[in-house]
Image (tube, rainbow, N blue to C red; front, side, top):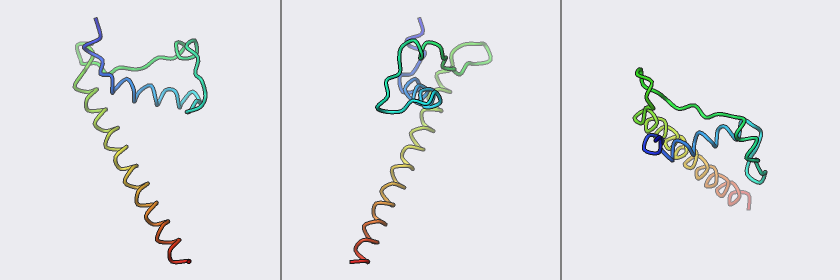
Length: 88
């Protein structure tokens, strides 16, 4: 019933945040029971229906933030390479 109303990308980003809040990160196994004890909030319209447009907006923001993070990491790598070449 809700398959068409929940974006997989939205669910992925939301679960990543939820898992991180629980204190888990890559390399640690999060049990099904622990995950079931927590919930994922879905945006809803004023009518109480799942808001797919809002999910898309949230996904776009996560993607923008991730793009900026990658750009910063690349700039830091370049800076580190320049610093290494200057000290040689």
